[in-house]
Amino acid sequence: MSVQLAVVLPTYNERSNIASMIERLDAALAGVAWEAIFVDDNSPDGTSDEAREVSQRDPRVRVIQRIGRRGLASAAIEGMLSTAAPVVAVMDADHQHDPNLLPEMLKAVESGDYDVAIASRFAEGASTEAWGRPDRVKASGIANSLARKLTGVELSDPMSGYFMLRTETLRADAHRLSGVGFKILLDIMATVDTALRVKEFPMHFAARATGESKLDRTVVFEFLVGLYDRWLGRIIPTRFALFGTIGAIGVVVHMAVLGTFLQIFGGPPVRGQLVTAFELGQTCAAMVAMTFNFVLNNALTYSDKRLTGFVPLLKGWCKFALTCSVGLTANIGVAAILVRFGVHEYPSAITGIIVGSVWNFALSSRFVWGRY
Ligand SMILES: Nc1nc2c(ncn2[C@@H]2O[C@H](COP(=O)(O)OP(=O)(O)O)[C@@H](O)[C@H]2O)c(=O)[nH]1
Ligand SMILES: [Mg+2]
Image 1 (tube, rainbow, N blue to C red):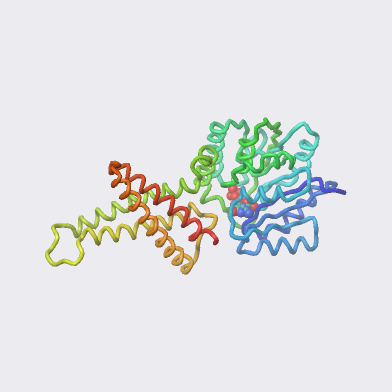
Image 2: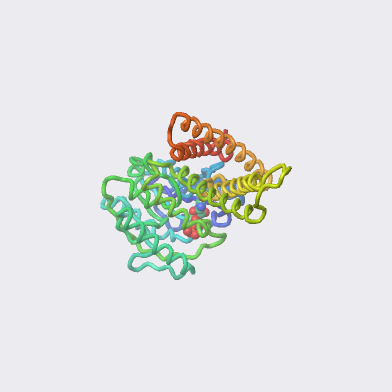
């Protein structure tokens, strides 16, 4: 029998949930020709190994192991594009989503009456009490209403991570999806031009079985980044915007350090002094600001390629410093040339800064966080 339904399960450190998840899928999907695809971002706990072991016993289980990448949305997209099944579902691998909803969702999509089936945490009849996370319930509520306003998607739970659709619907617009962040359903709904017919299924959202949430800490940040990406990401790329924002905060840090330094050590220059307080302060401030930028970019702009461990961080910092020195030279060079050609000093300075940061961004994304 040809495969009817693919269930995509993005995973990061879910080793202990894999085997039980497959057991539950097997029980829930009796009579359906299904396959399960774990898309694992090379989890340090060996989730991929565990999934391969399950796959040895049950060939309906497949594994995509991604190296050097992170991200729920891009994992879901890659999983959905990897199947020949006509219908595909995405769900969490941590048992928060009840697989017993799958047959009804499949019926709705297969009937042709609906394009998308969504398991909703907030539809009539759904519940989130068992989740045990009133803080996240509240955050999801706010994010949902914001998302509804900004994208015009009218759903009770556009941030749900549990949904099903025909693979051809996805493939038609896959190249236009942003793949940034974690809210893949919202991305799909906001991207496709035709109005999708949606059926919502109230679900009882459970507590995670074992392991810990990956989204707790970054959920708000990722959400904002995702919204930005939808809005302006095509004009100014999201990563560059983040890089630039962090750079701008870096300038504030620089000034604060320099100001403090001059407050303490400032005063008229002493005769015979080798370096002035300003020169020393400027140097310290630049080092602090650069380190600050490096740390923030590592944590936020490149959260998916984050460097960890002392040696990689030190190496990364040295490369970043080197990159910044090239950018600084470009910055000063361009500004100086413009001034010589009679351009006013301020626009020249700003042009220099823009050229320098584009340069820094291009080089550092490649040499510090990229692969070469
Ligand atoms: N491949 C992949 N899966 C992820 C990533 N982050 C989270 N997941 C998986 O996505 C699902 C939902 O994530 P979870 O941490 O439970 O988020 P929460 O339910 O919102 O707290 C789980 O199966 C995670 O293992 C990621 O960066 N890459
Ligand atoms: Mg979860």
